[in-house]
Length: 141
View 1: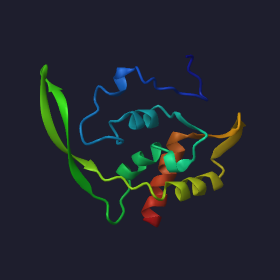
View 2: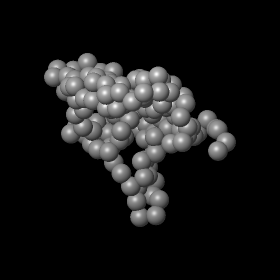
View 3: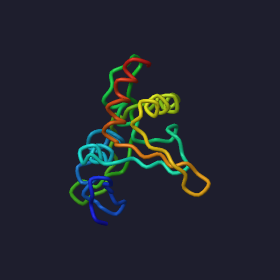
């Protein structure tokens, strides 16, 4: 897919986005969301609203707000070719305010909407969304 200033794609088969993805950073800086942010990519929601916008979790990692906490999770990982169980701390995600946050972002004029078939498409710069969401979370959570 040719790259243009209007669209940046991160393929689900491109493993370079997960090479440095450490446990405990599911949607944080070292995740594909962080990579998309650094690439100044776009978010395209097709038939879905901001309540399902995973990019908003990157803002949760960055924002400071009361009640922010982590919990312990575990997963099998490959260490020097050997499968081992690893425990790590992961952010407890809170997405019940994503719809309201997304509507506030849309009201800022930074989101374009249009129809695709019978659904609504929403297109936005991920960096603008995440930066907006960090401030919104710090003021509203």
